[in-house]
Amino acid sequence: MHVDIVEASADELGEGPVWLPATQELLRVDIARGEIVVRGVARGDAAGGNAERGDTAGGNAERGDAAGDNAQRGNAERRWGLGVPVGFALPISGGGFVAGAGRSLVRLADLDAEPERLAEVERGREANRFNDAACDPRGRLWAGTMSTTREPGAAALYRIEPGGAPAVALAGVTLSNGLDWSLDATTLYYVDSLTQRIDAIDFDVDRGRLGRRRPFANVAPADGLPDGLTVDAEGGVWLALFGGAAIRRYRPDGALDAHIPLPVTHPTSLAFGGPDLDDLYVTSARRDNRGGALLRLRPGVRGRPATPFGG
Image 1 (spheres, one colour):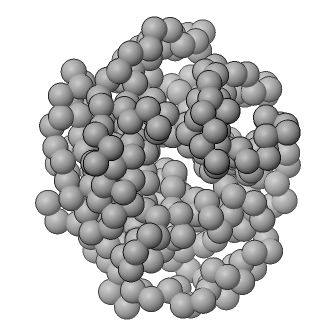
Image 2 (spheres, rainbow, N blue to C red; image 1 turned 90 degrees about the horizontal axis):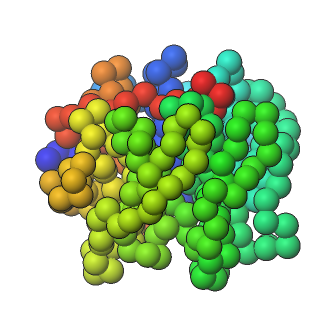
């Protein structure tokens, strides 16, 4: 399968891609730089002359200092720095964004606004931070944390109702990562990376409660660390293999359907986008000369629109 390099060496630690249909843009985060990134992506927009980014992101440590970067990049990509690692950023129904900044949950009325802190989790656990997140079909936010020292069981998966405080939905987590729901929303697919598997968890969509948890697909350590995931419109579960230089698709019964090699060693997450949701975007981490790239594939299946927080 052909893989386009939309942007070479785009991020230090790219993560959390989300398609914004209203503006036809891709939202993602660069965790290591503490940045939220929005990029307009047209089909055929491959790396070309953008193979070297230059020293444009370094000046974005302070919020609002994105103009120089935008001028050099033709306004195709815009970056906003929050000053701390940003695990995720998601749109809010009605406008604005919610983000995991360090161990704080923050709201931004727009990406040029100062962040408003909504809540803080895991006080005293300085080595922890928010990581991956997604909204269920009712618009609840499910956001996980991770231990940067990989202390076993030190993190959690939280459920956040619109206007509510974070509630622990799953305790004893080490590195909370990808999550998405089955087509009928009766199953949450969930990754705690150090377990080396995707789990399937019974889900009560009306109450927002988790039930029985069981292994869905195991990943051999030699194949990489299971990272971000997304579910396509046919129920297939796509997984990024961090350190495995590949992504995978599993059928709804857990059988491996496809293993697709990539030109980067550390893919982190993936999301469908484009006008017809038939482009698959893959973020990655910079671990070698090709790492940190933003990639695009056309796998022959479509994705589903992301539910905004409160939507």
